[in-house]
Length: 281
Image (cartoon, rainbow, N blue to C red; front, side, top):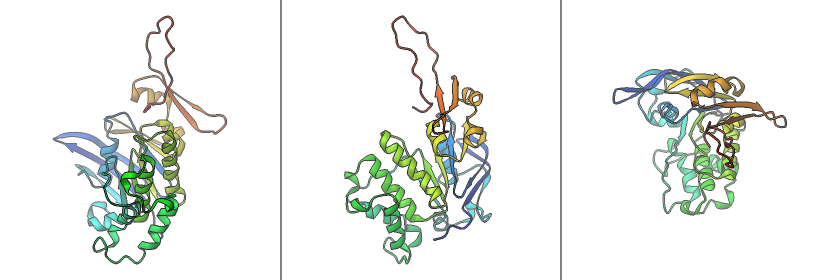
């Protein structure tokens, strides 16, 4: 399926819980062929905003439109699921179903029932399995997979759904370094190879700098910066938002930005020096 005008725009989106506003008038855009990373400290509203974009939480004000200026709230659940996919942080690991089963689940918006007619389904499922390197494990039960393999299976399900917008909530959470890198490469391929507009919540600023075309920085529910990594990851802004000294340098070999933070503390005689780390580690 060719994606027509992959695009999602948030205009003045606010979210309230129990009368308390937790997201305040957020404005930003997800564009086809680009990865947009949402970053910010814990409690900054990143995941809540992503869930508002996916219609899992009700927004108190503002609008969300898709590429042809369609009001996202005007679409039926099935129509919306043909255009937007969300991979949330917390997903069950069903027992007794295989990798192929979970990839096939991505075709649910195109079927009248679980096994309803879906003319394009077989080809879409085969492409998704090939793209995520799962061809050799399609018959494996989900409960036997490693964390990284399971994450790839869910990504394959999202690819099989063939939506123009993919929303990912902390997809590298609880994965070791190897699987984090694999997932980041998959995220990049969703935009580069499949033309999707990708919005991803990330804790690690270096991961965001590595894969994102655009970065949206949130603080206390407000968008405080939006732009390229070079524009959004300004050291003074990051220092203010995270509340600790943060530096941003460019790796001379890769050209990528490197974000480092130092926690101020008193050094005792014979003790180790403060460890440098990126926010989110």
